[in-house]
Image (cartoon, rainbow, N blue to C red):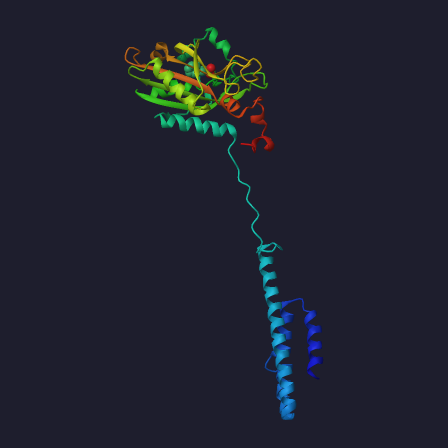
Length: 341
Ligand code: PHE
């Protein structure tokens, strides 16, 4: 057989290869020690010098061509094998699919921000349980059994519980837990969930988040309370924000105050402002000086110690910060909403 015919024969067998073992036997057939090319070369002996040179170089270039084709095919089989092992028919040289990173829920972000802010001021973080005793949630906080202030909290009680445990209605019971365990002076904040039997609407939820603050020491005064909260408000809402302290009533503080900030949207009374409803102020949190009866309940001497406390709603801060009008958006967990933060 002459070389061009041999080439055709090889090409037609080569095309039919579907497996590495077929490739290997073809390789042996053509390039092996007893293969076709070898026998052609041996046969050259019988030819004249001129023919020997011509046919010799034809055989040689066919040999190179066959080697290249087989080696390329071998690589293809090997790649296929690796891809099979990796379980994917994809091109492994393609750039990786970008990972979608998770992010914090806006309530978590604000919680962390407030915690960081008070940590910088030397507050440490305390936590209390969500199921509380009546005593910690009300009694020790100067809210006795028949006190009308209990009506302010629509409370979830644990059914048929002999101890009458309840879901805490505010983070203030952490004040009691902490004072029973620690000696003043200290500064603490207590973040967490609170529960109230509320009809759910755009500004109310039956589960929401608060951060409680408590500072106890010698000669702690109302001006310490004002300075601390004014600074916190500026950090949270911008340096130009002003704070207003309005007298208010919470049984566990005296004097008590409700703290407003100047409207972050209209920045002054604008009659049509949807955020402050034209008043120029937004109600933010409750605060006051710790009531002597609270100190007595935890066996602190009210003549020795004074302190202030405050409680702020995290949802409220997040709504003001992000301009969110409906609190329910925080709990519905639609990704369209959450991925904006
Ligand atoms: N616990 C009060 C509430 O939930 C807030 C508050 C805390 C007020 C501390 C004064 C001092 O409404």
